[in-house]
Length: 441
Image (cartoon, rainbow, N blue to C red; front, side, top):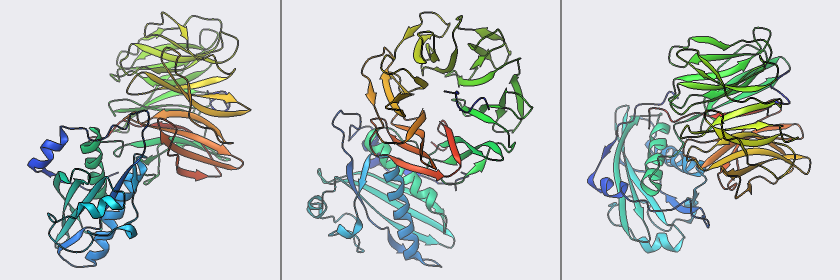
């Protein structure tokens, strides 16, 4: 994985009250997005009706909020958001209980979101109602609050509640993606929100930076940097901003993934002669060697239950994905197609490992189960697609894609469908890493 590069919101406060209708809906999963024949579910999102206007332009606030919900639903790759120009009914003021479900069914909607807004000074109160069009029944009714001109966070919460009501999971809305931007002046790590907003520097060293990693509990961030003249692994406490060096041995020091309990971190070190995998206890700084091979062992990734570790080794003659027990025993090769497979990333839901493999002179993203079976190719284009990282829900994958002079951070569903570009640049954008969910969830 590290062959080419490693070597050289604040969101507004949203208050939610849940009506009894929501309690019943939350207990039931209405759509199975993990079914083999999954197709996007059509949803209609009406512009919110104005119950009581305030200052400014309430009609624009209504449109902005609805557009925000549409945008977030579209990002999930699960929904097909219907064009509101196709609506036959539902945008005019009226009683929310009087809905002609047949009008929504005829345009192909499976689900319908309606709502209204009340303005009191700079405070805005929204009420959202989600309906199952086929059954003709309300799935939830919820209230939210925000401020005028700042309803994007309300839209995010509504979209998250829709996803939770229909799938049983709140989705990946309250997450960030870290990645490396390499320029002529050097490389640094940046973060952005799930919707590509709020781009920020995490480092500003203009050195070589690589392998960004989030701890599952959201407390720490680790990465490899050459800012002190040679590769070292740095650990930063995200709340305090304090940073310390946790690996500065002679030779190579590369950052791997955290353990599921965030108490340990995997490292690739060459201090004993060649690249081997180690586990470091963050509190005691006790180091344990896990691999003992004359080959190169790199890119370790912990399984979500903490019992297994996936890694890359050339012990079979070419870089391939292997799995071993967390103590280093019972090593098993799981990739056999292709002669260059690397960058393993374990799904948070367990069972599958995403990785990049060389095929027809291009790197593509694949996934395979942890026994080496059920191989699936996820990308097929003419770009080089590398460094996959799973979302916390385990239903999306972020990765780097480069074609000609353009570099992209893209996401797709876990089945390879619904590809979306988050950020595009002529700078080199690599090594994306998806954060855990924030406390907003």
